[in-house]
Each structure stands twice: as structure tokens, then as C-alpha cells.
Length: 146
Image (cartoon, rainbow, N blue to C red; front, top):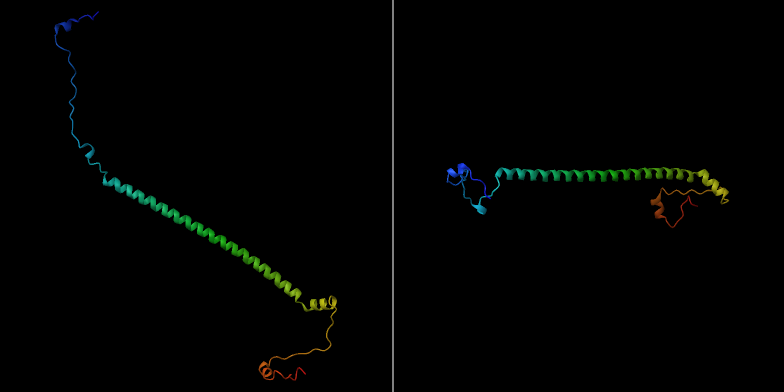
């Protein structure tokens, strides 16, 4: 079965018309040889961005290195301060011990109590202020020593 013929179609023995399309203009190009250069403004913007990023990294690195050097110096100063305080405390303790152990009363008490020593009845004093005169008469006893 075929579709029924329409009276209009029978009247016209012409082929159906195709709607006209807008005309298409073809422009020939250079293909792969075309100038594909990037605009100079874009290149300069990219260069400025790269310089700013590098500058930011350098400033950050300098800041970190200064902070670490400062921290190391502060740690060394704190260690030296602690060492100085320890030295002062030890010096103070040694001065106290020297005054206690070097006391003539304590030495006399230890000598008489522990070692059984007594005070000497006769004492001898040597005068070495005239060392030049005594060096000339080195072999002979001086008047003070006799």
C-alpha cells in the first residue's frame, strides 16, 4: 500500500523544494604554519608573576633564616646565663668554705684536738726584705738568723 496521493501533489509534477540554507564562506588558513605567538602583554604579565613569586620565596627564606639564627643566639645566651649563675654560686660557696677552713681558730682547734699539737714557746722571724744584700752573702748566715 502506498499513501494516497494528495491532489496538490498531483497538480504539481515538481520535486519537493529544499529550504535554502545561509551561504557558507570558507576562509583558507595556514594550518600548522600559522603564527601561534602569544601576545607580548600576556608574556610580560607571566614574567612579572614569576618574579614576584621568586621574590616572595627569597623574602620568606631570609625571614626563616633570621628567625632561626635569632633563636639559636637566644638559646646560647640562656645557656651562658645559666652557666654564669652556676659559676657565681660555686664561687660564693668556695669563698665561704675558704673563710671557714682558713680560720685561724679552726686550724688551732684541729691542730690541738686532732693532731695533739701545742703552741710554740719560741718563735723565729725571718726578714727577707733585703734580698739583694742577702744574695751577696748567701753562704753566710745573717745576724737575724743567728
